[in-house]
Length: 349
Image (cartoon, rainbow, N blue to C red):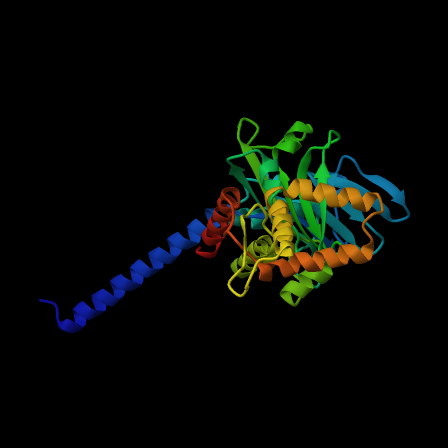
């Protein structure tokens, strides 16, 4: 019969073995799970060993020591003192921005290093100037029914993209410098424009893409307190932080289409002015596209001064104190569930 000490040692050994197996499985699962990294831009200081011009079939010399060309979908610009590469890692490695997996990031960077002869490993030599975090969701309704439900993001500008026929295909929020952006758009519009969208070409559903973009070195350093080398995208902590920023930005966008209720708890009576304000806010929530079109129309006619536009935005922010809102509508709830599940899947690995 085994002694208590021997039994204890066996249990410890067994527990350690199970723990190692569990960690190994988690590591493999994390490596194989889909990633949300898309377009990046790399700035490389040291051009020694560069062979990208030998491997590109469309090199153009645009000036003295100034060359432009492509390796795969990566656009490469060579200056006298540096080289910049910009493109989608997932499209470069797989031909699709849906199939990127965690371990593919490292493999894609290694492939790009081989084809260009450049070294990305040291942040002193190569740092990121752009990072896109993106996710595409299949949704239940046509894209416009969701796009019309998104309002302002505090401190940022908002632009609408449309087709030549005037159909809304996307929304873009951006800083005045363009350094940070968030884009929500109809993914199938790319297919209709002749741009091949792998994985959804044979689908008859509706698809929305959500892209969070850090567009320059300054914003990347602001968010991570330092430069990031391309290979830091393979670090779990860096990736999870990017996904968290993606979620936080989406959550910060004003959601419209909600029911509006007047707060009457502290009122002795309801005035006609209260009813007018309630009606105006209800219209803004229930018909956001018509409301935005009206505001744009009077701006273009010169009927809404800059001063009055600022006052209008102040009033819109103030309305939260005067009214109560339903939590959201069904379509907003649908998207929120998809966003939260995507983040949970990422942060739990």
